[in-house]
Image (cartoon, rainbow, N blue to C red; front, side, top):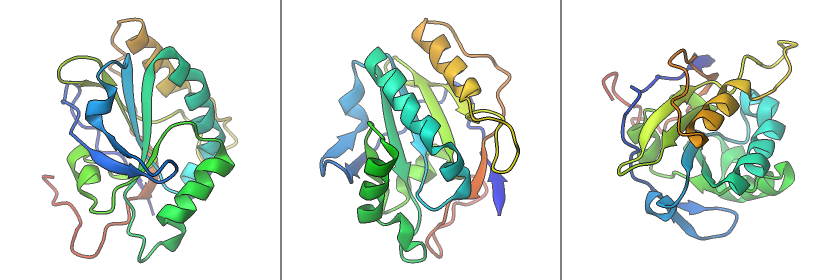
Amino acid sequence: MAMASNMLPLGTPAPDFRLLDVVSGRTVALADFTEAKALLVMFICNHCPFVKHIRDELARLGRDYLPQGVAIVAVNSNDIARYPDDAPDKMAAEARLAGYTFPYLFDETQQVAKAYAAACTPDFFLFAPGKPWKLAYRGQLDDSRPNSGTPVTGRDLRNALDAVLSGASPTQEQHPSIGCGIKWKPGNEPSPTN
């Protein structure tokens, strides 16, 4: 069932994370990105049709923005017992197949998804530099959805990235992302206030 992102308040500090990158086998942490010009945290997975619909654009974002000093990480928080297509070995294969040039992190405990109030895949959180990082954009990649006939451009997220890179604030008119709900482990669902 499709659901919308939670739209965390702008200005929220970036929650800490320390997760395994399934491609390199290295641990990646928020602290690794102190010199970045922006930080993009994307909650995605392998099996969701909404993510499959935009996977080429996700790869393009990496190719276009990593060289400009943007730190980009993708996080998969799904319950792999019920969704084995999202298991770490399959994540690594998907990252290679899709051409992802950014770390693809596995959130086994689902605590990072909870800290970010992530609700769906895809869910995007763009932070402007500072101590701490501050949320500048959250919401959709663009207006395209599976079977919508609208081309995938990445317009909304790209405009926000370009604004942060130029030292400006993205537009305050931000639209929620729509996607598959994060597949919480039984009993691990966030409370309505979480």
